Amino acid sequence: MRRISLTSSPVRLLLFLLLLLIALEIMVGGHSLCFNFTIKSLSRPGQPWCEAQVFLNKNLFLQYNSDNNMVKPLGLLGKKVNATSTWGELTQTLGEVGRDLRMLLCDIKPQIKTSDPSTLQVEMFCQHEAERCTGASWQFTINGEKSLLFDAMNMTWTVINHEASKIKETWKKDRGLEKYFRKLSKGDCDHWLREFLGHWEAMPEPTVSPVNASDIHWSSSSLPDRWIILGAFILLLLMGIVLICVWWQNGEWQAGLWPLRTS
Image (cartoon, rainbow, N blue to C red; front, top):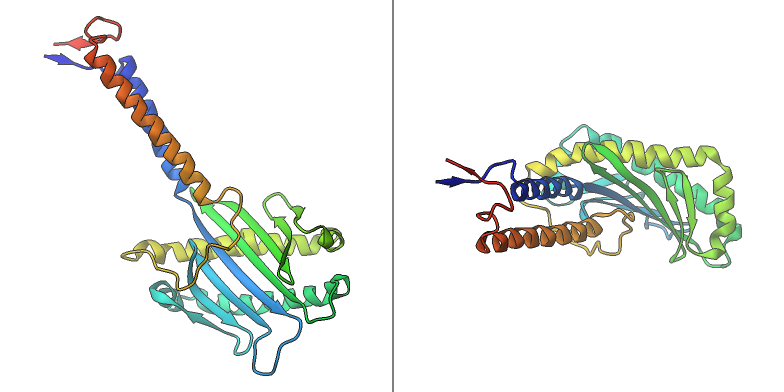
């Protein structure tokens, strides 16, 4: 009976490909948390000047507004998080961040070329993979125009709209502001993400978001890109298996090109 040795070349190749596949599965197995704030410089009576939505893995599960200063849970995940000690901390932080962002909007209003009430949309994003934070960023949209991106991992600014260049220079000079953004996205956001993941993984199936979250900003190392990499690698793995089968059928193993251990 012919038995393939685990040290033979084709087997080593196959094991190597499988190990790479496992590594890539770990890489794409990341999770993300995104806070989407909408701040208005002026609001009508009874309407909130700050609204926030919170997404876990692109699924909406929390809503906040400044009118009642309360967080509303959505779906099964929201209900689970509502029963944790993190809920009170999250409610307080959302209110504080909303007020801080409104102050920023008031400070930059003279640099905004409009006489109408201004709006500031802010997306705070963090990503967690392999037990560590691998992404943290802020995207700022002013009056509907995507304007600035702050990478909290390496403390760098990217100007998306050239009209926001002066605003970028103003904020870049404020080292305390940059540290504040970094602490929230790389520290607090990642902490909450790890807290929420325990409830997410315990759920029978993923929560379906009641809104379209496809327009939310995700970092350049976001999950869809990595799934493309994984798909390409799976294709490469299948091609390797096919080649091994072809070599086997051609009798190259029996011819001694790859050593076999017989018993």
